Length: 436
Image 1: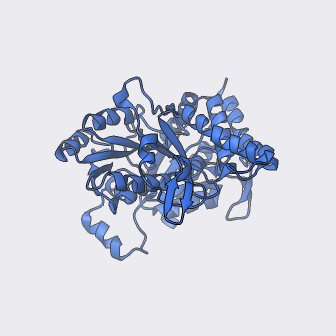
Image 2 (image 1 turned 30 degrees about the horizontal axis):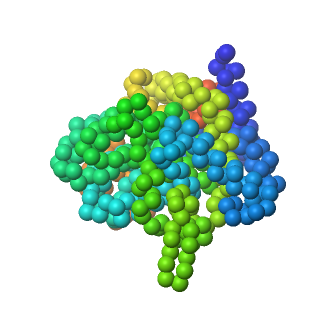
Image 3 (image 1 turned 90 degrees about the horizontal axis):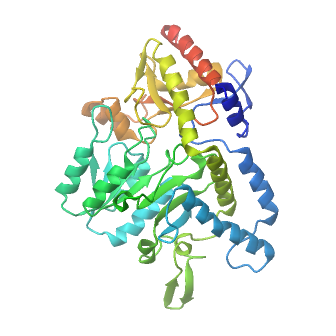
């Protein structure tokens, strides 16, 4: 099967992929989305399943009507689908539905705050703010440092675990960076963390839609304790996210949100909490979002996660090879062909502010990218090699044109012809940059 046939087949799975949008000159062109690390469009199959389910949608868990029973069953059976997708033991773990990865990590931080008082949380210098800020005001936090290419320094991981002498209870790490795309060696990290008596949380937001994740491993010490991810980055943008962790942890702590659906019994002076996951899903849940997510997982499983990974990384390599031939392109991180990463490519054009480059790509060719610091300011500051003085300047001059970069992030439906349009547009921008 040719590249064209593969791309055509994949594109046929995606809603809105041929949508026409206006350029700055009002010409209509087919939109090109290279911002998949932020969010992905929905699968057509997901939209169909939502439409099929909608006539039967109802409140869940306590209704006796057919629609309520039907919706309840769909909602609860979905947890097994989630567990199977990330290869975890549904008997030992619980699947808690939230809005997104950010809420999942915040929820876990509240729960562990009660269990792990006076402990240390170890995260890394490459994390999205959502895997950093929730820990800062509840725990003492330390950070795993990076090497010269912005990759995690595993020697520093071991050093920090040894330094804190058993006080680190949790190591928090991205499965893949949303800035550089680096795939972190999460099973090796798990093994190291467990050897020091710590657990591991993997932020799977940039991982689960791109390559297989195994929470359970043949070696127990390599197993993942907690996993968080968002459906909107896996072709199901309908407001659902997932937190997975050991049932025993969630049994022992009151929920951070209380109210409908979280209890077994309430009297004037007594509350008996429901078991997890019910007590951790306060209020009416997003049943439609769960239906959408399980439908997306069905498509991803049919395509095969390894096949998706290979397809996306080949497109990344094609793009990188083309861009390396252009003058004045600045890349960040490891651009060697054998670098283990998802299909994310950060860059700048020498002499052009990142915001200008992003706007020109949209205005000239209808290409959507992301620019800035991607909710990972400390990581981007290091990749840009900003001095302490430069960083401090922007603390007090927030509205100035801040340093950052442009990010290309590919999905399974992107094509080589779209990349060719990107390259032609970059050539035009570079050629005329003195007049911009």
